[in-house]
Length: 126
Image 1 (cartoon, rainbow, N blue to C red):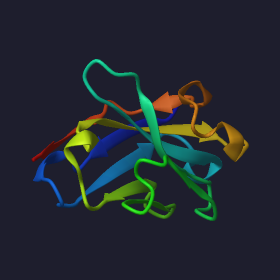
Image 2 (image 1 turned 90 degrees about the vertical axis):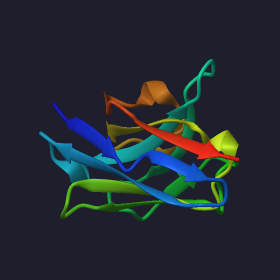
Image 3 (image 1 turned 180 degrees about the vertical axis):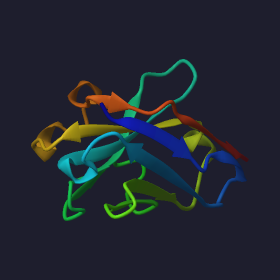
């Protein structure tokens, strides 16, 4: 059983930056591909970014490409999401998720993931 705990959310002005962290415990972290999703009020959960077990491969939603960067530190059992040039549309609860090694084809699909964190709120003011 893997436990995931997100941190780093908060309130930021448009154009600002935040870095989210997701600390994993209870499993072999490097066995898992990791993803970030977000959910705004009244909207479905949507894919943001994902990274392979060794960090060698990443994927991004078109809406965040060139603004967000996903990375991981397997020595610290942590995955990060660096968010730059934030927009009000980025306001959402951000969740990290873990899945044992699987094809990157499936990374953007929420049902692919086995474990989820509780989420961290990101609010971007205009």
